[in-house]
Image (cartoon, rainbow, N blue to C red):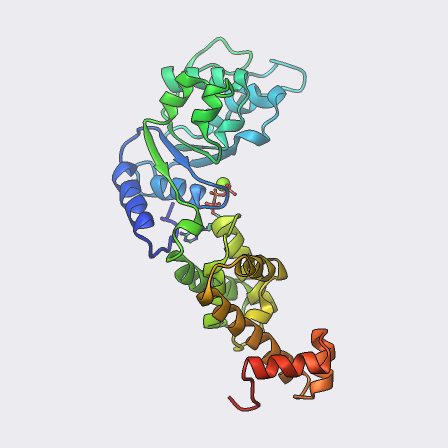
Length: 318
Ligand SMILES: Nc1ncnc2c1ncn2[C@@H]1O[C@H](COP(=O)(O)OP(=O)(O)OP(=O)(O)O)[C@@H](O)[C@H]1O
Ligand SMILES: [Mg+2]
């Protein structure tokens, strides 16, 4: 497996990537903690691709998606005849990852019974398929991920302490995107190029106002949300045209605006004005600078538009 492309500009990410590289060569279990969409799977893939196991499988499993009743046959496999429908021997997930890396995503979603069964494999490195008497040895590196606070789950009895200590010998925390806003501009360029290539388009340039608007937004869905936003913008963009605030999702615009009205300060106000200006200029362009049509298009009265043009000092050729 080739290392995935990871872009960043923040010190926090630099440290995280350095640490990941350093620990890649060991087989020590790693726990990656971070909010949804921060890049947990990406880091897991980086670790695998830089390890001596890179020629062997990387097996991702979403622990929350495996139903309790199927857990044992999925993870441990089964022997032919173990139950109705088990027509031939089948290896489970643990065996499929043999020699490689098993990525246990959302490990906090494992039920108590599933946790107990996983713990045994982590401790003994051996397992038995359902309906089998033979024990097989597996050599798997465990990389787990969670967006829950497992320490809290442990206190409330939702997560076993012994399993926690087994999976978390090494712990990596990924900061939410709002805590490392320096990454936003480089991520914007990266995703714009990535999705333009996929869509067979020219990568659009994002206006400075868009990038600074993005820096003021909180990104509850983190990098995944930013990627989706840019994907959408690239899909909607005209070839070669610059992307302006007009194309930003209303959800993001209004969330930043609400923050602004709560009194974040003058700098934000200035940025929002730049956005407003872009939106109005775009509408004017579309309507051939006909003021009445532009006002209608924007849902403003003619006087309302006139006031905005004065306030934002919008003139025809600038
Ligand atoms: N630093 C980065 N550079 C490039 N792409 C990134 C970066 N961080 C995240 N991504 C991309 O963002 C998306 C989300 O990342 P990933 O799936 O690794 O996050 P996650 O933490 O596992 O999310 P979830 O909790 O939703 O499963 C992916 O498409 C990934 O490639
Ligand atoms: Mg994930």
